[in-house]
Length: 145
Image (cartoon, rainbow, N blue to C red; front, side):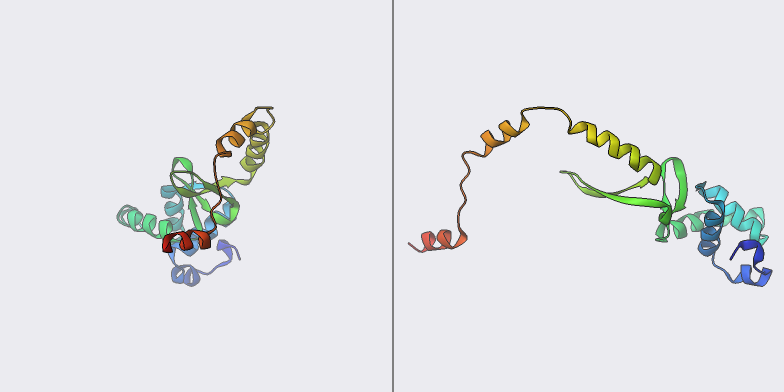
């Protein structure tokens, strides 16, 4: 259902986040928070004063709503428009959201990383040659002796 098909009463009964979802869905593109909330206010016929006093509350609402995703440079979009790629780093774990178009380009770049004929495998084997595997049962028996 499109926003223009809803009655004024239906619109007034909708929450700000539901309206924002519909706006982003119909627009099909990302928006800055102030632009998005301005459209919500315009649809509901709210004053400029309401916009100014409630923009912070709208930001908090959108930030905690799982359907929305904050992108670079303050843009917001629907999470469903982006694929999720989990990147595990030595320092911490984080979820990274990537535009679907950018993901293909990133995959091509990552393939290039593994194309070189380096001797990293030899170095790793040398590092592991002094390691020994200890059976946990054997270790407990040693402690009892």
